[in-house]
Image (cartoon, rainbow, N blue to C red; front, side, top):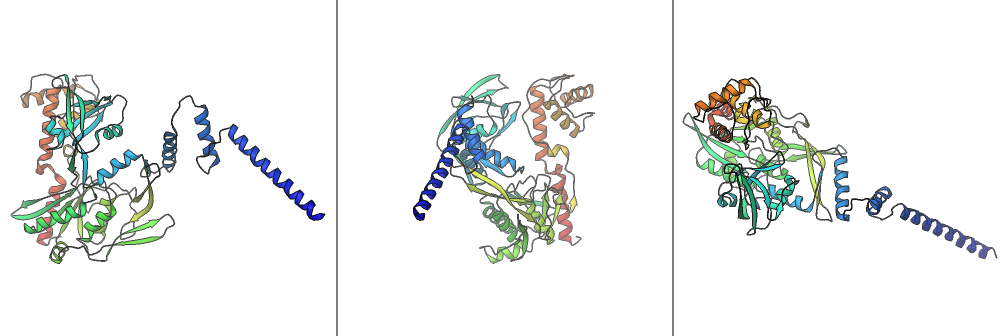
Length: 480
């Protein structure tokens, strides 16, 4: 009898519990209860938006927005979410090859302006010129588009053709071009031999540490060795970083084997040393590379992996650093693929120099500080329009900086077109045989662009490189 009462009581309790669960689910459904996560408030917000928002959107967009929001909540500029298309573009930027049309674009006042087509690229062959404004890709106008969206539209499969509508300011008309996408080498290493006082010095520029940078580095430095250089200048200026394994290989070619070139520290404080390893190349090459005097050039645009290299060679006194203080990015990111095809990139470790210093937000000081000439540091940007006294614009500000760098008497570089600016423009137009006037126009801007390009191409104007060469010569003489 007692047993039967017990089972009746147990059954009643089960019914009560089941009823409570059913009631809870009903209540959840009333306030929005689609399950998209294990977090009730997220499910609730998702359902409320889906059922009540006047701005409808699909499930994928809502979920991507939630992921972006979570990444943004970390308040870490290096932790981010990539959509499937954005992830593909990011990988291409670091890959040895990429597919595209070969064009450098800048966004200005909501317009997409061609800075320059890459030499021998499909864009150049199709006739695209600097200053062309891209207004339409295939049948889609670019009004309201972002730079990322434009890049996605331009990217595609090799061999495919895209149609571009361009506005050409020089002819004041729209033109339509067909351009065929192609595979292009994304080389990150360039080298040459520089002769200083009858001494051959190798110069190697690394634009970023990409997928094939280590292979390109070995190829470039082997060629320099064959040309009997006596030292190497490594230019890491404006190198934003890249793959850690690539910088590890480059450092391994010039440092002793099994030496610590950096430390990794996780969120719990555990420290792991990163060590150089023997590269699978000829012993003759490694013996030569490890003995070469080396100078590293860096500036405020040198970040992340390039700072790992600078920190390594500076700590071991393997090289002297010439230039200015580096950017100061001391974190390492890892990337995970997500089920929707996107990727989540998170900062998972700090990296420290061999002396266990964290340079995040501080940067690496140069051994020899050299301030670059402001004109040499200016980017080459497209300039169009007509401006006169009393106007205020970015175009005027840029031109004032150029005129100041060229030695003209301008008293301000903030973009306000004052009387002194007009006087400098008059002198510039006369000196460069332009039509007389006190205004800036397209002919004036074309001349200014040529002046900046010519200035930047003249090695004598690169004060940091010239100091690097001077330091190298002193090292070779044994003075340093």
